[in-house]
Length: 204
Image (cartoon, rainbow, N blue to C red; front, top):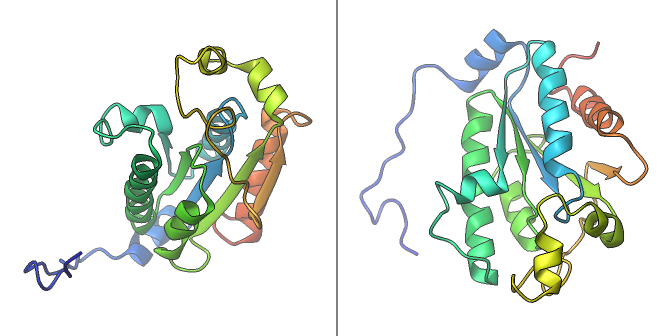
C-alpha cells in the first residue's frame, strides 16, 4: 500500500479540536466495541447503554453490523478477507467518531482477534473499550432472533460464525458480560460502570 505522501494526501487539521468538543459535552469520546456471537445480545445491550447515557446527557452513536452492511459496506461478503475489511473500515469510522467527542457503540460479531486488535491499535490508549458479550452457542442459537442459525444449520448460509466459521473470543476485554445470566439492563450498567471507572463519562 502506498503512503499518503505518495498519493499526494495531506491531513487537514480543524479549528475545533477534540478537547473543545469534549469540554462542551462534559464527557470524553470513546469507541465501545461489542463483540460476540449472533444472538448474544450485542445490539440489545448497546441500545440499553445508549438509552441510559442519553438520559444523562451523553452523546452517543450506535453502529450495528447489519445496518453498516446495507450502506457503507454493502460491497463486502462474509469470506475471511471481507470480514477483515469490514472490521477495518468500521475501526476507522469508530476512530473518527471518537475524535468527534462521541461515545460510539459498535455492535459487530467481529470474530477475529487480530481484526479487533487492529481496530484498537489505531486509537489512543483509553479510547477503545472492548466488551465481550458472552452467551453460550446453545443459548444464542435458541434465541436466534433473526432465524440465522436455522438457515446456517440447513446450509442456506455458508461461513456462519459459530457453526461453519470460527469465533475467537477476546482474551482480555475491558468488560466481559454473561448475557445468559444477566438482564440487558444489568449488562448495560456494567458497561457504564467501566466507562465511569475509565473517566470517559462522569460518575453518578
